[in-house]
Structures are given as structure tokens and as C-alpha cells.
Length: 313
Image (cartoon, rainbow, N blue to C red):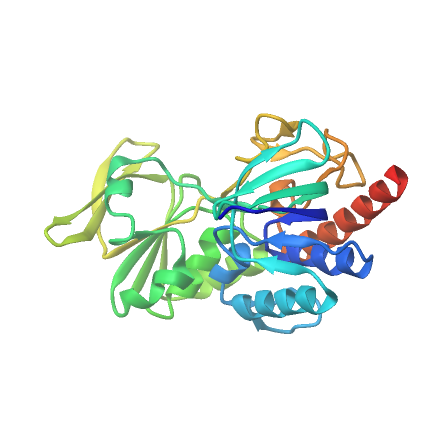
């Protein structure tokens, strides 16, 4: 049976931004409800070592998210394992419908839905997804012990994935369409020093090739963007690491967006184009995209919502 529940603050999403918003909103006695979404804990649950979160010299991504969830719950945030399928922002209280059938009404909403992996859009990529093609090295790297694999991309994600995959693979080929990486210098240094990694510059992935029965990757066809020359590289796994897109489906038609779909907020705040709706974390951050900045924005969103609700009263 579907039920309707009211809350002063509804937090949608459960990464560092969502859980931190929960901590602050609960401490402000707003009795927030947090709906976790399809991927509880967000992107950090698909990373291994996190070495840049203050207070932890090194911590596993999933462990850090469990600690944040426990902290939010201990403060008084009600955490629900469900995901929001629609959000009506036309009037207050705002109305959110969940996949379970529950309807939530809220005086303020904090959006912390994050971002998700981008894909190249190739037919062959789609065909072999889950059968040799992946966007998550920490999820699937284990399956490629002693195998040759390729990573596509040139940013932090691609370099981190390539480095991580050397724990399992006999060889990792990093394929990048330019001749220099966008990744942080410290990561680049690690990459270039790693004897298991070979970098293939000025190349793009044209096709993933493999067997149909059983479904499995045997190699990739790559093209030199300067000469047009095409060649095949044998491999058993293909990891696509070309960045992320904001998970803006709930609000893409109602909130002001910028920079390719990120929710626009007023400078120095988490206020969106609709009063009472706040955005925090990777959903709005096209620049930094760090766990610590997401957590900071989650704090800001809760304080902004608290101030807004006080003014309404």
C-alpha cells in the first residue's frame, strides 16, 4: 500500500553531500529523511583507496561511506533504501514519488544525486557491457587476473583505473586521443613509472571485438587520429573512463543548468533557481568533483535549508 509522508527536509542521494547534509539537518532538529537512490554511497563505493579525505591517511571508499551513513543516522537522519522517480517542484510543499510507491512531501529539498559514468556510445561497447566492458575497475578488475586489458581516457579517473588494474592484469594499455593527460601530476608520475602500463597516444576506440557464444571480449580496434591508421589490440577487458555526467533527470526540465547539465547554484550558496530547492556535490560541481568538496556543499545545503525554513516560519 502506498503511503504519503511529510518531512521538513528531504535529501535525495547518499554520497558525501547527501550524508553530510543529513548530519547538519538532523543537528538543526529538522528531522530529515534521506532517500539513498539506486547506488547507496555514490561513486565512492566504486573506489578503493581514498588518500585525500581529511582525517584518513588512507581509507577504503565503501568504508568511508558506511561511516558517513552511520554518522548521519546517529544524528537522527532517517535513511531509506529507495529511489525517487519524480519530483514536483511547482508548489510547496514539494512532492517526490519513490519507486516503492511512497510519496514524500517536503518543505525543502536537498538534491545530492551526484554523477555517473559516461560511455562512448558504440554498439559494440553496449553489446559487451558486463561481459568484458566496464566503467568500474574496482568492481570488475578482479576478473582479469593475468590478462591484458585496456583503459580509455586521459583524466584522473582513467589514470586511477589503470593504476588499480595493474594489481590484477599482466598488462594495461591506456588509450588517449591526445598526447598529454589531464590527470593530476602525482597520478601521471605513478602511471609513467609503472612498468605494466603502456600509453597509446593519439588513438580512439572504434570497436570492441569478441566472441558471441559465450559473450566475451577478445580485443579492441583503435584508430590513429593523426594518420587514420586502424589496428587491433588483443585484450580481455575494456574499461571506459572518460568522465561523468550529472544525474539531473529529476530536475533537468525545471532547474537552471549549465556546463553540460550541472545544476546551477547561486555563487557562494547551494540555492538553485527555485527557492527551497538546494543542490550539493557532483550534481552541481563541474570543477572540483572531490569527496571533501561534496561534503562541504552538503553542509552548506543543510544550513541554507535551515535558514530558508526559519524565514518561512
